[in-house]
Every structure is written in C-alpha cells, then in structure tokens.
Image 1: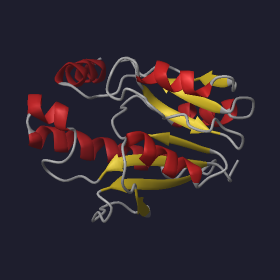
Image 2: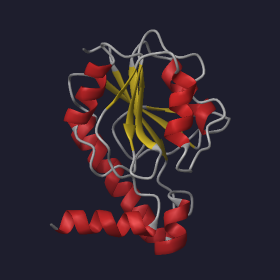
Image 3: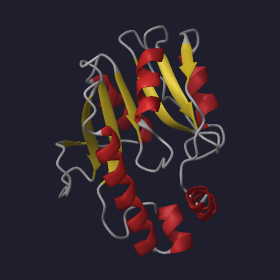
Length: 191
C-alpha cells in the first residue's frame, strides 16, 4: 500500500561517528566502510520499492547526505524518543536501522502485512533487541518507555510496553554491533 512508509533510521556516514562499538574492535575506517556499504545496499534494494515510500531519518540533524533520497533529522532525545518521533509522523510505518545485512524487500512487505492485524510489529534480533519496529494507525501509546537499550532486554521491555495491543513478529535477523557480529556476517557472506 503506497501510503506505507519505510523509515531508514541511520547515522550519516562520517569517520569516527558510526558503529562506535564495532569501530572500537575493528577500527574506525573498517566500521565506516561497513556502514556506507550497508546504507548503499539498503537504499538500492529497499529505497525505491513501489509498495512503500522510503525516507531517511538521520543524525546528526544536518547531515551532508551522499544518497538520492531526502532526509530529515532525528532530533534530540534518547533512542526511544527519536524513534517515537520518526514513527509518529505516519499512519503506518516501519523503521529499520542501517546495520542489518540480511534484510530484504520481502521482510519489509511482511511487516506491512502484519500491520493489517497487529498494532505493532517487530523483527527480533539475535542479541535480544530488534532490527525492525512498525506501528499501525492504532498503536501503543509509549512503546519505547523505560527500554534498556543495547541489552538483551530491549525487545522484551518494548513488548511489555505494548500490552494489551496485538503484536506480530517477523523473522529473526542479526544486526552488526560488535566484531563477533561482523565476523559472523562475513562468514555468512562467504558461503
């Protein structure tokens, strides 16, 4: 449905500011290269799909953006406040980060289908967080309140905030936050 919006919720690609946990282990230049490659792939594979509109919501708030899609700022606040603000602009939206190498157009389409019967949809990540969140027209009021971000509890905390609303899950994927995630991803791409 063309009224649906995919939000690429990302950092502008600048040396020393992206993938900080990963950069501490593999170096800032390697982390920047990974980040740029993933953003390029996401924009190429997801950014021009006719089933949804795609927008980039980026930090810092005034990035110099090297890709053809328009961007808008994430604004101030913690991760939850920034995601809430990005999603609030749309009746139905799915938000993903830029560090999920396995995401495909079919995953985004599945998330929008799930919003046909659920008020929220999540893509669980291997580390206990989530790589995708989508909210429908009728949605939980504060899904991101008191979430323990960057911990194995992030998904569970967010799901608890969604009770009693119906929630759907799409497939589990790996995000790349650490050198171990990076090596696992490299191993997956070598096969």
